[in-house]
Length: 541
Image (cartoon, rainbow, N blue to C red):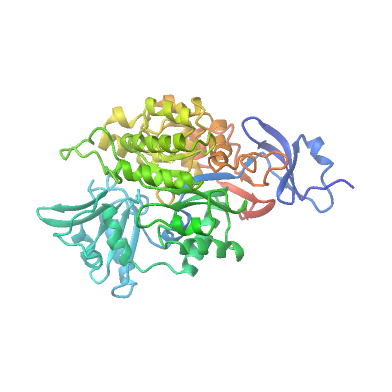
């Protein structure tokens, strides 16, 4: 007796991959793709127990892979005060939202908020600590910029972190003062004392965050993701939380764990001692790379550049780690068998990272280690040549152009800003760029990301070097196959081919023929399949 499919999708375009193209029907059996082909070819696999899904002209694709986000942080911040521009477009609205949360909170309870962008506020500046003091006089407040690299604290929060006017900023950190007084702004490493004063999330809260964030991803057609700094919130306890979530059926998406490796906060020694090196795990939960932070964000003027930002201070951003220290940490992780996926946005940080990778690969050759440069926003042609030669891959978030492109122009000027995140260039060089959201930096909603890849337009409509546009097929490849490649999983997922994982996203329209504006403004995910099981179905479909 021949195998009969558990699920068949038909009556709409099914995009299986760049090489595989579009087919009429798709058959899934257990957790794998059984077959793809014409209606006629797949009809023989339909049995009495097969669920036949009528696409009604909608597009099915491999499940999307968000190749760089922070799943625990996404889940946790879904409970924070929303200070993103859409929710709080003015400083008054932002402060009102914080005041409203404080009114419902116990005295002394932390008020946490994330998402503001000073370049989009009506004031055009960061909030001040005194303004947060007035909004929440009885509570410590931590307000995190959208990039996650800058925080504004009120006086109570600064006091709990032991920071005053006499405090000296650590290397790779900024404690801002004006006229001899703290403004409340802390950048990069200077935030650590305040963050340490915030009560650490319990295992139950971490598991709930994993589940909450993961279910949101499924509603967007995202079946795989990378958690880009495991250990950042609760140290090694996050490893336990992920395994508990998986054991209890509360891990909704396939997750590739990137281990925080920064000195003083690293969980790599504990993971290595437990045998948790790159590739350990299974298709649902796998240990991935080691993550080091080399700089900050461009919009926050903390990404490390070789030339100064615009402005009187002539800053070149934040240089986080000495060359020798970085090279020691990279060599150590490389020798232990880890892939590395390090944060570098500015061209100076990228230069430092490529050099460290090259030295590690020269000492211990591995032509397929696939060390990654996370973000890689302002890379240069000379750096691209070295990346190709060494097998180093960019892992960008094209939605940064949509959300922050105009801020880049404001702080760097058009000549440097417009050519940032050169997606077309990376495609043409064979660097297989993945894409993602860096959530909660940006919303994991894939449609602004698709729109940016197709148009290079910011949210305000500025075109940032149209030569870097790609086609919808290439954009889909970045979101699926290249996402899998970035995790060394391209033989397992990322395409709809017999034997690969049965992860499928069904969108409300045919993206292959829709205009970029329609994709951005009038498209949604209608149905998501993970491992052959329907895990999200929009009501009414």
